Image (tube, rainbow, N blue to C red; front, side):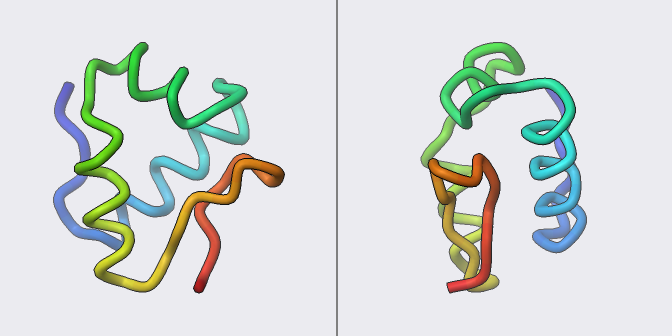
Length: 60
């Protein structure tokens, strides 16, 4: 799956998908066939981390 390359656009894309379509980051990654580690690394570079309780990436 093609996902946005810009970290800020990726953040919006992933959080929207998590809010509207998926109950967890693992479910999203499996469904879209993308590596969780890649998503976390890119979003970590802009100081965001996944929060399981909120099911979204939030600022560190």
